[in-house]
Image 1 (cartoon, rainbow, N blue to C red):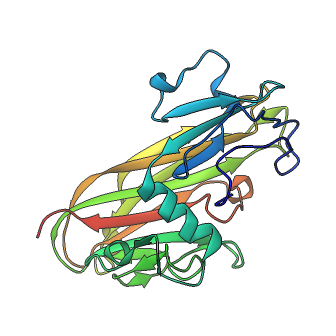
Image 2: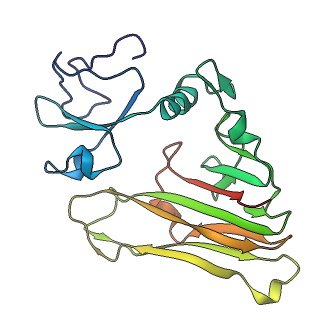
Length: 238
């Protein structure tokens, strides 16, 4: 709430209980997320958060106190149709040359990476071909991808799922995709946790014309929440 810096009694989005007393005060630059999954013994200094607050019934919120994070969150959640706000201009983000930040569009089958489904945040200054990002200038690039998994409908066993980042040149089809990073998850019995995020990233030397892709082996496990899955790249050197 932009007009009230205290967290009042009440429930959030049907969670079991997020009742906070008036003694809990947060700065106007705070951005908080539910963090019960970290356990009761984790302190703020053990994490990247600035403060952890607890409700009367034991739920916890982990909070950042950062104006830039607040401005980005404000833009995404409250002003989705603009690329800048009074609180901070984000043109530096989407005007970067040789860069892209894509979200997964679940309205398509199979889901496709899109620069258009989250205005103000998703963008591309590189061509997107066949669900891959096409590199236009040779150089060092930071490549990253996140798939969020929801296996609440699976059980008791969680199937094994593979996530990777690959590259290939469209004119060298016989060579096949080159594997750069890979993660695997599952293949065991579920023990209460229904969500998992697979994050891959790294620095690659990429030549002009190379296409970068990220894939997951089981689409039915993808969490379809709007901001849960993203894929991006940006050039590190001039």
